[in-house]
Image 1 (tube, rainbow, N blue to C red):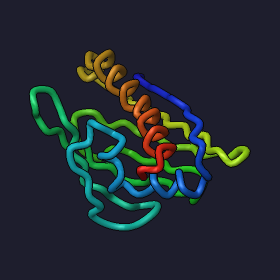
Image 2 (cartoon, helix red, strand yellow):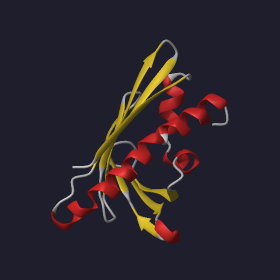
Image 3 (cartoon, helix red, strand yellow):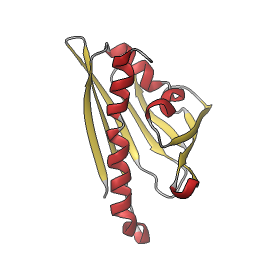
Length: 144
C-alpha cells in the first residue's frame, strides 16, 4: 500500500496555521497540483469538496474529497471520493513554544490491477506531502 508522510515546523501560532490549512480555498496557493477546488456542501466533519488535480499532459483529474474528521486545532482527516486513486489522509497539528508542527500523512489502498500503479502513486504522494515545505514558506513569509 503506497503511503507518505512529512512533518514541518512552522514559526506561526497553531490557530493561524490550522485556519489556513482548514480553508481549502488556500490549497492552490501551496499545493501546485490543485487546478480547482470548491466546497460543495457542509462544514467541518462531512464537508465535501469538488477538487480537480493537474495531470500529465495538461489533463485534469477529478479528485473530490470529503472531510471525515475535523478537530479544531488538532486534526483534519479526509478521504478522496472521486478519481482513479482514492487515498485517505490526515493533517495533525501540535503547538510547541509558539511554533506549530504539521504532519501530513497519505495512504492509498490499491487493489487488483491498480497495484501496478503503486510506484507512480507512491511518487505522487511523496511529492504531495513535501508541499508542506511550501506551506511553511508562505506562512512564515507573512503572505498568507
